[in-house]
Length: 41
Image (cartoon, rainbow, N blue to C red; front, side, top):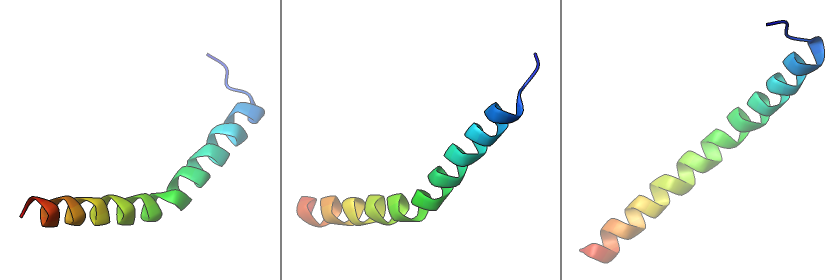
């Protein structure tokens, strides 16, 4: 299978956006988990 330069740039761009948002998502998930555990207790 031949991968074009455009596909590489496209995948790289999506990966960059994903990794840029990863810390925010992790923080949100941790806060949600803390909130759910507090509400359960």
